[in-house]
Image (cartoon, rainbow, N blue to C red; front, side, top):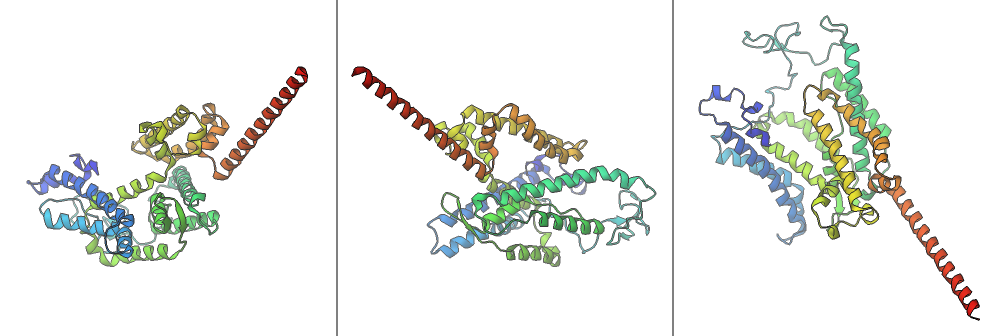
Length: 400
C-alpha cells in the first residue's frame, strides 16, 4: 500500500502525459487512506462480535461475518462520492471473457503491443488451448524449463504442506480425517489442466485458508478454539461465486485496487496472533513477568528463546531479500526449501534437542517430554526423601 507514494510506482506510469493535472502525491495519499481505512474498518466491525452494542446477537454476528464486504463497499463509495476527481488504480478486468494474450498477426507468435508498436490494434487473441508442439523454433525450451519447473514444484509442495499442518493443528479440534496425498494429487491434476489452458498454477493460499477456518470456528473470549463447523459447502459456494463474477465484470472495475490491498492486509494481520513466531517477536517488547505461559517460556531461559527468534528473523530476511530482487527471484522456492536443512542441521548447533522440541515440536511429543520430566522429578524427590530418611535413621542409631 505504501508503494503508491513512490513516484516510480507502475500505477503512475504515463499518467502525467495523459493528464497534465495528474498528481501522484494526491493519488498516493488517497490510495494509502483507502487501503489502511479498509483494514481498520474491517477490524472495527469485527469487534462488535463480543460487544454489548445492538439489540441482539444476530446483528453483532452479521456485522462480524460480513465485515469485509461492508468495508469494501463503504470505502469504494468514499472514493466514488467524496474523491471522484482523484484518480486511483482500479482492478484490471478485461472487457470480454477471453485469453488476454493479444497477437500481432494470425500466427500469434508475437505479443501486441510490445512486438508491434506501430500497429493500431491486435489481430486477435491466442486460442484457449496451448499448442505444446509449437516451440517457435526453440527446441531447447522444454529442457531448459525443467529446472524452473522443479523449483515451482518445490514451492507448490511446501506451500501446500505448510497450509495442511497449520489448518490441521491439534488446537483447532478438527474431527474429520486428513487427506494430504489426495489433496496433492488434486493440486497436480488441476495444475496440469491450467497448464493446458495457459493459466497460472494452483497453490494453497495459506492466509485465506486460516481466515476460512476462523470463520467456521466457535471460540471463547480468549480466542481458543471450541469447535469448528467442518463443511465443504462454504468452499463450494465461495468458488462458485468467484466463477460467476465474470458476469459482473463492469462492477468489478469500480473497485479501487488499494481497497483490495486493504483486504489482503487484514488477512495477514488477523492471522498474526495465532502464529508462534509473532508471539515470540512481541516478547522483545514485553515485561518478562507478563509473558504468555507457554512451555518454552516456563522451561527455557529467556535469552535462549530470543536467540531462536533472532535466527528466524535472519532466515525470513534472507528469503524476503531473494524474493524481492528480480535477478535472483527465481530461486525463491529453493531458499524456502533450504529452511528445512537449516532446521535439521544448523539450529542444533545452537540449541539442545529438548529446546528445539519445546519451540517447534509436535504437541504429542511435547506432552511426552513433559510427562517424562515430571516422572524424573518425582523419582528424584522420592530418592532424595529416601536418602534423608536413611540419614535420619543412621543419626538415631548413632545417638542410641
